[in-house]
Image (cartoon, rainbow, N blue to C red; front, side, top):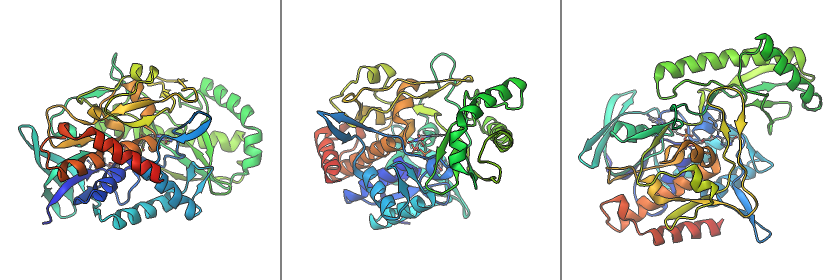
Length: 416
Ligand SMILES: Cc1cc2nc3c(=O)[nH]c(=O)nc-3n(C[C@H](O)[C@H](O)[C@H](O)COP(=O)(O)OP(=O)(O)OC[C@H]3O[C@@H](n4cnc5c(N)ncnc54)[C@H](O)[C@@H]3O)c2cc1C
């Protein structure tokens, strides 16, 4: 069995960026993923489009997620798989991400589900995976938890925050779906009227989805619409029985909404329900307690941390965990906050970092940085950090040279 410097668990945007950036530091990396492809929520849960993480500084547009995220955009563009810099074809994305892994010498292990972390004192010694060949155990010097759910940290006994402070309710789960053969011009022209009728159908009980309106996006495919509109509240995404119930409720919502649209919406006359995601989308689950807990207040005051390694200014976009309504706080032009490296360091463990939507934060903060561009930047920061740590022979993730990390990230951003 090969020995690795780093094992990244989870192949979403954060995990892929961790793996690529670590490998670019010359260390040996394995990425483990439970499904058959990379992309995480974008591919497993059909999440689309990319939200924007950019601002204007001194009149100039500044991308706050450059680096690996921009490399992905360029590759999508080259394959005609991106429109408006945001809406993408996930089948092309899967292929591009595989190619990027191979080019960067990252080893991949698909169809492998992390089931156990084998920890001694403050160190993870190995991890156990359920595979087609039974359970296998793999070890590395360092680990990155990019599972979205903080699964590796949870199995290692780390503390976590679930949902909001007062009652642990997380943001709702959503099963995305697509509808094909729509006359989209006709559909959009009459959408306001349909939104009103949708609210009426909620009152009569024909629509059980508590979401306040129909959230629909155009796609790069002609006559195909993308719906991110189902809403399952008050179900814990880390409880397998509750997550199963959520899938069942969401699927019922999909069919209610589709039947409603077919009967009420212009342009839907010849449409068909084309696909639902392979897995319900989870906006928020465990947020692992780290050396620093990033808070909503940090974001609102646009805090710039000395050990800041990621910048973001996306809206604090909270879908109501109890029912209807979505709250927002938009940053003004020029405003942004940074995410400190300490938010990636789980308490009590010296050879693991947390990456992506499960880093150390409260609900309000996570509601902003959870978008795909920003989790990619988080991944680039965690992977680069482990690269430095291995090369500099540091034995604790706490002791990385922050200035060096910041410089490498800046250089990568400028290069793109
Ligand atoms: C419904 C919904 C709509 C959204 N809308 C947008 C949007 O419009 N634009 C936007 O930019 N962002 C949006 N987001 C947010 C964004 O998609 C996610 O927060 C982001 O993709 C998370 O990336 P990640 O890499 O941290 O985790 P994930 O993408 O969740 O990746 C985690 C990976 O780990 C794997 N994994 C998990 N557990 C294990 C295990 N035990 N063993 C092995 N592998 C494992 C999973 O299969 C997955 O591939 C949305 C999210 C949802 C759910």
